[in-house]
Amino acid sequence: MTKKHNASLFKGLNLIYEKVALIGIGNIMFHDEGLGAYLVKYIEENYVIPECLTIVEGGTLGFTLMTYYQEYDKIIVVGTGSKEGPVGTISSESSEEVMNHSARTRQTANEVEITMMIEICSFHKDMGEVQLITMVPDDIIDVCNGLTDSVLSHMPKLVDATLEELENSGIRLRKSFCRGVSFETIIDAYANPKVSDYNDMSKLA
Image (cartoon, rainbow, N blue to C red):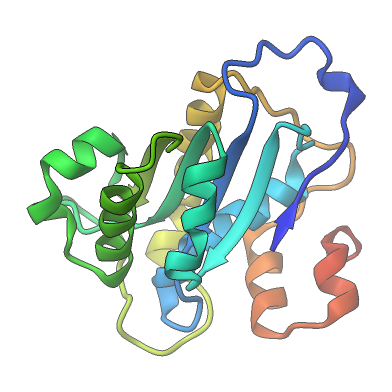
């Protein structure tokens, strides 16, 4: 699912890339595995999104996301990671850094798919610049909708890291005027989906 907003307020934006994709990956059925999907939905609901930025709830789409690697100038992927460190540890790596440490990166299904997509797309002359932002989860084994309390408490840091990478790409997002939509509201909407609520979560805020 993708979503773009036409925002004339971004006329003065200092664009570094013409087309940027922010992709959240992970399976929401396995506790913290879904943090990437919740993260991008949170940004989509709480910030004004300019035309140059496409928000993608990648979920478990895997290799079907490859088209973004080939058609966008910058791709920011957010999901769980297996880096050493306590729960909530955040890492940000370029595609080159991911490939240089691919043996250590391929610890989860998401990481394997990402590194393989980067490898395949690297043979394509129009591959965009890729940045991978990950956070160490607490539980990606149990079948359960929602985030563990420990990971939920660190999600604001993940939002900040994502916004910082967007700003490094020339996109400074500003908060929307509507009331903020919390992570708890977003998680509940995913666990108990209703089309009307999912399309306009501001009604639940």
